[in-house]
Image 1 (cartoon, helix red, strand yellow):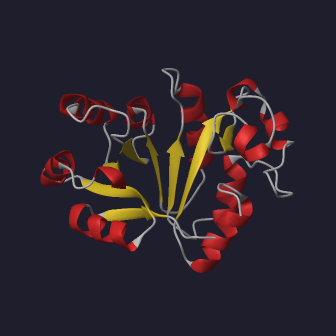
Image 2 (cartoon, rainbow, N blue to C red):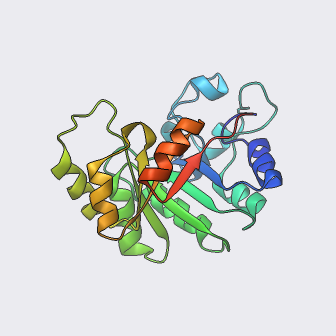
Length: 214
């Protein structure tokens, strides 16, 4: 199965797992369920999603499958509230409104446990102001970043107005996470793949985002 594919989501539902998926915006403002910013790795084609209309993106097939690249409303209809859902909203620049609006439109009629999260604190800030009923989280990793960025992390968390924090398992244990939990905020960690990582997570955070081997 390919990540963010309909077959992967069906398998997760059948097995009783929660679902995490990645969403980014097409050139015409549609929320596309896809991990990478370009099509090369997962669809074997050229082009960035942000430069292509949704119809052109959906015309491609996920590598090794006959599955089209899905849009968020179709995946929400598939899940239909049957599993907890985390939507990672991927918009690296400052203009987050088109993607946030697309995700919010898709969620307007959705009934079921759902939250949005992002590395970009502007995503959480947008939802806090315009769709405050949507649960929102800030995703954090220290990979490739100086470990002394304590102030920057606090500022990002404050700006995002997050309800929860999702922290890289590779950065645990963490004094920053300890401080956040001491203030009453729930913290999850990603992506947990091994028993050793489960042990670290159990001692450090409230919940895990995990990956089940295919």
